[in-house]
Length: 85
Image (cartoon, rainbow, N blue to C red; front, side, top):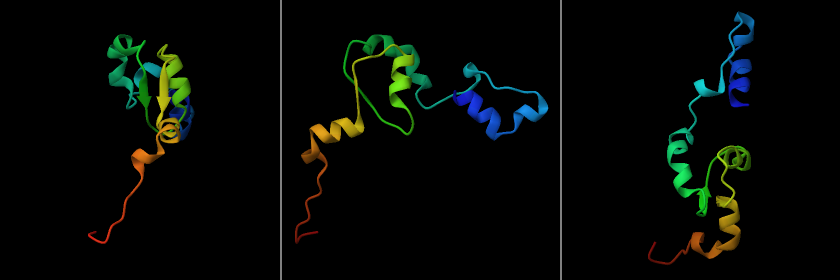
């Protein structure tokens, strides 16, 4: 999907060029070789976009997004303001 979107953004259709999925390097791409090691463990996912589709494409089903984590543990990310600051 990302390769198709980039092809359109870059107007590659007009010169009969179409990017392939394997030609697009995403920030999660380096994780692909090691994901099988963590496939059965809980993985925290972060990023803009459809994290669910990305994790499903890597055959990972035991993951949690940052937003879900914040809902479970909101106190971990609260800011405490004191007079010392």
